[in-house]
Amino acid sequence: MRGFDLTPYRRSTVGFDRLFDLIENSARLGQPDNYPPFNIERLSEDRYRVTLAIAGFKAEEIDITAQLNLLLISGKKTETEQDRAKFLHLGIANRNFERRFELADFVRVEDANLADGLLTIDLVREIPDAMKPRKIAINGKGAVIDLGKGDQESDKDAA
Image (cartoon, rainbow, N blue to C red; front, side, top):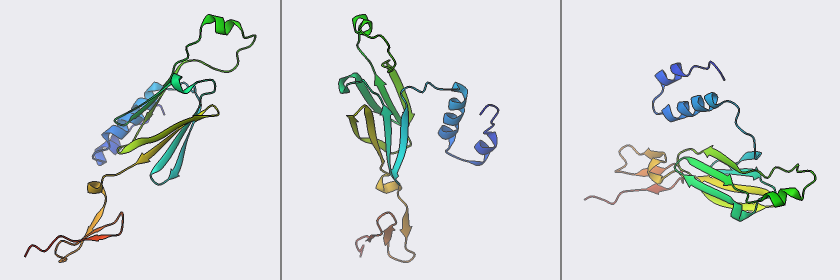
């Protein structure tokens, strides 16, 4: 992605600064560490799942922190040199890690599970009702149709 210029897009869009900054920063950082390996799935329109392969880690060695627009997953092994001395070959990576995922607005962590060496984190996007699209009826005395649900709400008669 070297040499990719987002300036023309910045000139013709409003409010996408954060997205362009993320793209430019990820291009500058180069090749990220790929441990632990992970999958990102889209389960439905507003539901996602992040799965990390963290064989050998216990639940108490994993820390999941959800901040505004950031999901931080870190693992810290507490092994000593005595534990390493028992192995003739150490091929399973058990090193400490930190994995960051930038989250879109209104995405929150719903659940996290650790089973069979896989950490699954379920995410859901919940758009506030005030930001959902609404259809306004013309000459309808304040009738509003919520396009998200299809219901019709009407204001109480003012008279």
